[in-house]
Image (cartoon, rainbow, N blue to C red; front, side, top):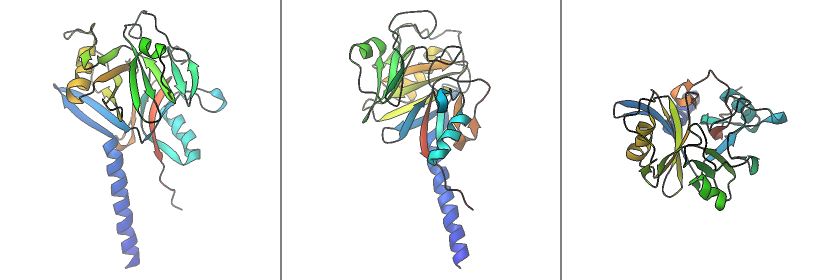
Length: 251
């Protein structure tokens, strides 16, 4: 009877692992548009990734997973974390593991990044914060990891003032929202093209996020193994991901 008991225990463990992983990311629809969102809590191991060994840019999810394997870890989910230059350097502020690798940009400029107000997503020791960039520059919090992008999608529960509900500019977009208590960060990717207003509406009216930040569009990619999804097709710059223990190998 022992082999049967071991087999049943193994099945139960696999079920619990799959259920837990599945809970990280969810696919849903809102106003007849499809979105996938992934949640991290402040107690989770959420990290920003750009440079790995020998200061080489990771560039994709597979390279990060290979690097994490040496720690006995893996990505539960990940997505591109902000805009970047052709050499994949961040456009604005980027802090990885306490080290500032790129400075904050507070001036208005061309493109979505310069559509002020933009903002900074920050991982502190006990909370996530999402702060307008000029406020951040004036009084920076103690971020272990941080990334700047723009525009802000939701500011204190209000839409960015430049958004147009009927805009015909639609792309696959991704972004991040932070709960009012700073304990949850929710990462969202549209599964079909949306405009800024439609994307922001999902954060505010479906997820109830008081603050949300646009990360990028067109190059937006999601790695969600539990959903059997790992987008590819372009090299990425900054990446954000939730890190979990990898299952022990069975000999």
